[in-house]
Image (cartoon, rainbow, N blue to C red; front, side):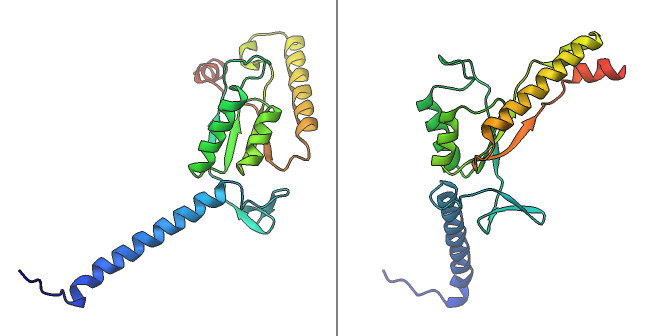
Length: 184
């Protein structure tokens, strides 16, 4: 049984589709490789128009949240160091570039972020003010003072660390608190 060669007019759409698929695979492969840390530019992040850049390269923010976890043996609200390292490796491998945490990152999280080329948006934790509805002014001032001290402490600890993109101060306000405050 013999086969007839297909005319180029019939194979052109197939060849075009194949070339587009191969181009997309190459683009994705180089993105994943650059997000794994080896090719990440070091140094502080800067505002570049409506984007961020670092070392003259555009910083693509592809983020994921991480935490909060049950306290580990040292009291940090993160998984054990080996688990955290494996998680950050998987996060980078899947193309994410930024990890948002809910509490200040311990040293092993900072080390893993650097190792895998990730930036952190570090959350700052303080006692929850949302349950002070109806509290005295003195109690509210005390919580506000504690919050201010927590932010200052985190800023001092994380200042100058190029792997920390930002501090995240505060969190979402639960709907029930909004309804109570607005009378809704």
